[in-house]
Amino acid sequence: MKILGIGSRIIHKEYGKGVITNVSSNMYWVTFIDKGLETIEIDADIEVVEAIENEVDTVSFFDVESSLVAILQKWSDATQRVAIADKWKGGSLILEPGEVGVSNKEIPINTFFHKIVMVRDRIRVMEQKINSSKNLDDQEKIDLQQYITRIYGSLTTFNVLFKAKSDHFVGEKSGK
Image (cartoon, rainbow, N blue to C red; front, side, top):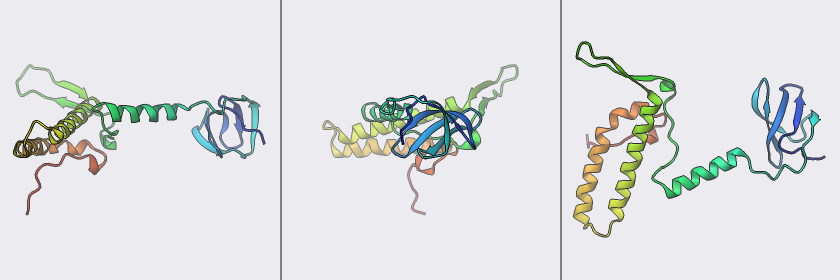
């Protein structure tokens, strides 16, 4: 059996017309006109409209994106991807002034969420730099760490925006 390359056009009984966008050892990733992206087995019953050869070794967009994200995480102050809670996707944050005659300010909630995540990431980087500093003594590190913990505590209001609880801000824990 000959492996089809990226860009090959096919027709699948269930999904219809599609183009192969990635190939693994046992699967094709195919973007179908009516069904979107689907994976099908290499030995699936398909009609080949146009076969592209020698394109199997090309790197997929997913591979490029994954590599770029890994590099950015390693060499910048960006950390892992953080998801916004589903209920907020596409929403807006509306700031309504108490003063009469002053107009509202509307901000896409995704923009606001991104800024909150960047604040959190930069605080984490600052925390790492404090903890690894050779110029601060242990007491100074403890004092600065307490300020950072209070900053996190002040930001817990925004935890409602995060999809995963593991991404939440955590301040001082009470012993109650």
